[in-house]
Structure formats: C-alpha cells, structure tokens
Length: 264
Image 1 (tube, helix red, strand yellow):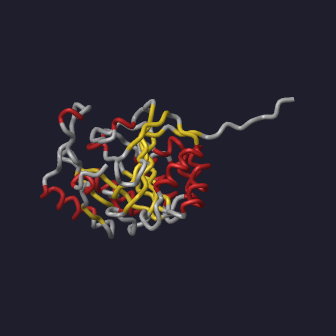
Image 2 (cartoon, rainbow, N blue to C red; image 1 turned 30 degrees about the vertical axis):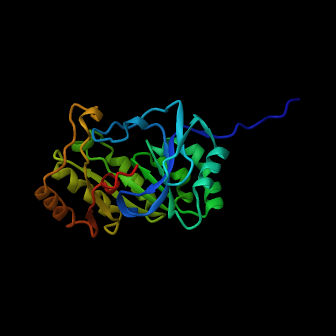
Image 3 (tube, helix red, strand yellow; image 1 turned 180 degrees about the vertical axis):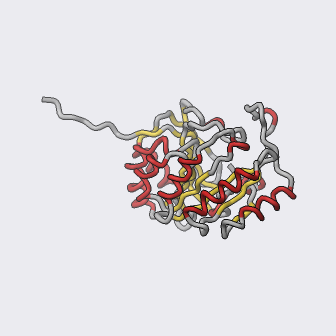
C-alpha cells in the first residue's frame, strides 16, 4: 500500500523585496514586502494592475534594499519563501513583514500555514494590506496578524462597491489587530460616499484611524481605464476631511510617500 504524501503549499508571487512603507499607519517604516499575485477587483486607479494575474516567474531581491533581483518560477513552495524572507531579515533592519498584492487573501489557505512559521522564525510583526472585501478569508488568518490596513473602496473613485463586506471585515479586525482604513480620493470623489464611509467606520469604532490618500495619477502609458483618476483639488480635500471628522477622531491626509522617494 502506497503511503499518502501531502503536497507542500505553494503561492503565486510577483516579488519579494525590502523597502520603506509609503502609505497609511506604518508610513516610513522598513518592511519586507511579499507581493502576491491575483486580484479580483479592478479599481480605476490601480497602480499594480500587473498583479491581477500570475506571472510565469517572480522576482526576488537577493540583498535587502539593493534591488539586485533574481527570477524564479511560479508557483513558489512555502519552504522556499521562508528561505527568501530569512535572507532579507538582517538583524535590526525591518520593523515588520508586509503582505501585499494583488489581494493577499486570495492565498488564505497558503497563509494559514506560512504565517505561523514565518512569525516564529523572524520574530517580525505581520501586516496585511487588503481590499477589505473578503471577511471569510480574513477570519482564517486573523490570529496571525498584528496589523491590518483595509482599503475602503468608494464607488465614485474605484468603480467597485463593497459596503457590506467592508463593514463585516472591519468588525472582524477591530479590536483583534491594530487596524486602520485607507480611502483613495480623486477628482471624482462623492462627498456622500465619504460620509457613508465615515459612518461605517464609526459604527465599529470612531477611534479607528482613517487615511485619505489622494490618488497618484497614472502615466498615460499605464492607464487601463476609460475613467482615469486625477488628483483632487486641495480645497476639496480640506472640505472632505472636515466632514469626516464630525464622525471620526483621526482622519489624516497622506499621499503615497514611496512614489516621492522613488521606492518600489
């Protein structure tokens, strides 16, 4: 009788690298980024459309911060990814590990096995960056997460609408992990949607920080939508922040600082 063998979990990745976090609550900190392939959303402003599908190979930084990438085939076995993260994890350099994408929660079964191992080996906190629309998958890995950055998608800006899922997602996150909400704003932002978003967050807790992130316009060659997103007017941003602060304690306006630093 042939003994059963269990296949090693694998993930389809885009890249693994070390960089300065440019968005949200962790802005300015040094992180090991694991960028997963696949996304089931099609936001008009997306600057990572190359992650929507899985490439045949992924690129891995050999030395943290040096951009000396090497190419490896997809999918990537769990033990191999652990080795890559350990190679990045120089003493005292990184503040956390960032799970980004794409949508990392599309790899939830893989993350269930990967996260406890990588936490134990590196001692680094785990940060999830997510579209905030998959509460069922979040529930399976929430015990292994230290912080969550949830994108709240305004239909007027993103072309996506996930109000109920966002609400369920946020209720799961808070207070189980350090949680903040990021909202992309553009010249198309609808004030009524922003106020609805503020009420959605306040219903969970008015203490949850919200980051309004003015969109970084895509170069014409990178635009894929018939409705490209342009930066909002400064006067509008001030009005929107004022409106949201009627419901929430912390509403901060922070652009994509990594774009200013020319960071990945």
